[in-house]
Image (cartoon, rainbow, N blue to C red; front, side, top):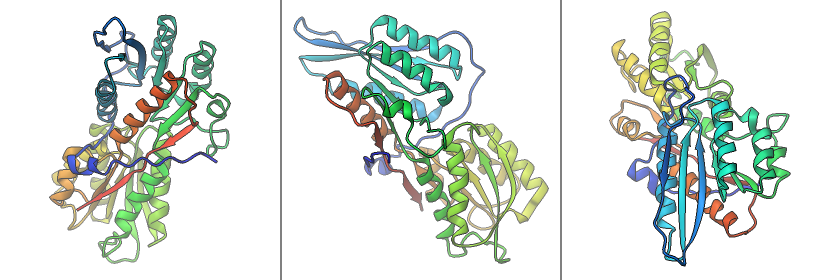
Length: 344
């Protein structure tokens, strides 16, 4: 079984540390890089840290990578400095593989990696382990062969770990948010909840789990009917388009709109307003990430709820584990950070 380490930063709810993802422009071969170099005194030890992000044009990973960078700075002392280089994979696995090769050539002391494709985890892990560099995988979990067991590539290597949140929990929380409403989401009183689902990247396990477990949790409270299930690829524009089309086709039959993330939920909210519907009165809307603007919408009744994806807890855990590795201390293979329900 995976080792469980729950690291909950409840203050994140109060300060609105919400997150969301959205797909951006097509990938190019040009690499965007940010580097933070702290001038060190003659006696200070400087560690080189390589951070590879699947795509800079992603709300959640922007918050995440910025927090990695700033948290490393807070850990610096007169004796220890961190030279942090962050690169943009532009959602292109070939580009990211080249970036990892460059990190190895540059002699990075530790690598923090947000994979473009989890299916490429084996190849990346093998080359980094062969180079003798500790590797901290974040945000996108590679899975075992049956899709539900700890990933062998991580378990087989003492210098490799994964830091993330269990997407099954986020999906469950979405379903519970609807199930805990006075009418359980059954606005028209016909004894069932008719919904549409807007999914993220279908190859991303977070999207798969959020889709499955949200409905599983709701079904425990009331029968359900799926009117439409479309892939929005995490994008706000797609969320708006899919919702608008569904509202045009199914009209008042739609009682709940489930979105795998808040970016798509923002698009859905715009379509709901344009169609003359009102969240909380004749339709419900839930997302995941707890973006600042979505938290505000929840407070104002413009969204039914969302689920906090704690970028602070995850990024700090990833950095703390990377520092342990730099010190030669043993790492666990898995570190988990809890999601949190966000309702009015």
